[in-house]
Image 1 (cartoon, rainbow, N blue to C red):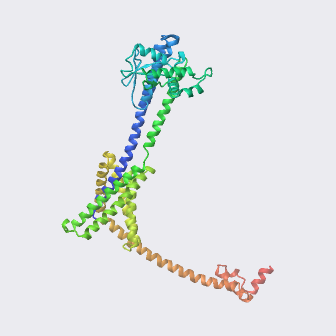
Image 2 (image 1 turned 90 degrees about the vertical axis):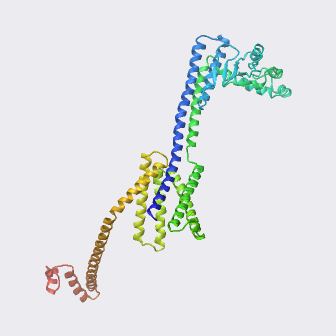
Image 3 (image 1 turned 30 degrees about the vertical axis):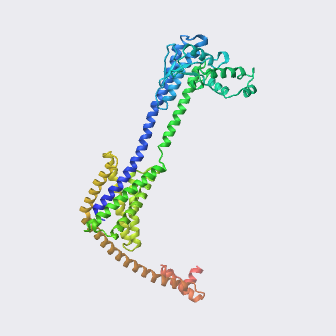
Amino acid sequence: MSDTVRHAKNNQEQAVASWVNYLNQLRLDNLLAAFARQDENLQSALSSLDEALREIDLEVVTTNRGGAKGMHGFIAEVAQVGVGNARSQVLGEGTVYEWVNDNGPVDLVRSGVEIQQKFVAAGGRFSLGAITEHVHKYPDFVKNGGRYQIPADHFEMIQKLHTMDLEEAGKQLTRGMGGPSLRDWERVRSFLDEGSVGLESLEPSDLRYHEVQRGAYGSTLGAETEKLRSTDQSLRANAYQESHPTPREGAKATSTAAAIEGGTAFVLAVVEKRCGGKTLTKFTSEDWADIAGDTGFGFVKGSVRGLSIYSLTNCTATPAAVASSIVTAAFGIAEQAHRLRRGEINELGFIENAELVALEAAVSALSSFVGQALIPVPVLGAVIGNSVGIVMYKACSSSLSKREVALIERYLHEHLALDKQLAAEYQRLIDTLEASMTHYVDVLQRAFSPDIGVALLGSVELALQVGVASEDVLDSEEKILAYFLH
């Protein structure tokens, strides 16, 4: 493979790695941006509740607005604005309610819709009596798109009673049991059947009747604060889950890497044929078959590369450039192993080539990493860094190659000479050891012979063999007697 082709492939490989890294970084950036937005959303929501609590304290309770019987109605208006806006703001949708506060036909405006709020429990008509009075006073309110907002529990009861027929109401509704009566059912049906205000013109408040009383609104807004924080945590958890790598994105990375590497393989295969002197019009079916084979193999390698890099960068703490170098080194070493099995290179050649493959992959990874850091443009920085690093590496390796070859050859000659010298010395020592051991075993056998005479002579010889002084060896009758009798 020529240096130009290898350089092009290195660039293509690091481009794929940089692109996968860009996808990963994009997900991380989106997560951090989502968290930052959610910080602002939560702060805005909590501020709306704080503002509502302050307005209720200062403009309603302190001034005793509405008196003992009507104060809760003004509390409900301000609380609905605060709660409604806060619930919208925590979702990042901004404020939706505006408090009109002019004692006119409109209490609230929500996204351009005029709302009259009625929180009335008197008469057991679930705020419908107050709505009837407002309709008589402002008959065009509903026709002009206005809506009536009532406590959430009142709305639920109206819906429940509205769905009952007379027979069911007669069975289920009784007086004096703490629940709605048949008379309540008749009032609801009469109101809705009258037709001036249909159920579609009613809507529930975010609050229930008891939650806006003078002694309850503080705890109501406090509980809403906790609900907002819970919603905020859920939104953050969802954003975190969405930031995780997905099989779909992994498949996208795999297919894109396959397309890039397959396309690169196709171009390089065509260029190689052209450099051989053939024009495109003279390509034979065999040429195109070779090109197709290289392209297909490129697609397969690209798929493996894309999936491997995506997996390594997301499942382990591996930078994309390093992940690409790992895959490249794996491919290169696998190729050298194939050459070794075919007998094209020996074991030493395999080790040297594998080391070179790993070194070039490491240089490519480091160069791409530095290039991306210096040029923070996705893909471009990695490619430029890889190009500069590889060129520098090639220049250095070329300039040092002659000296390195001479050093390696001299080292090899010295190593071979030392091997011969050590082999000869080793063989001489082995021969000496074998001779000594043969004589020693022979003496040992005689020393422990069952024949006493042979054993005595063998013992004398063994003693002398192991270094006992001759004057201390019991080799005569006189020495034996002297040793045992004195």
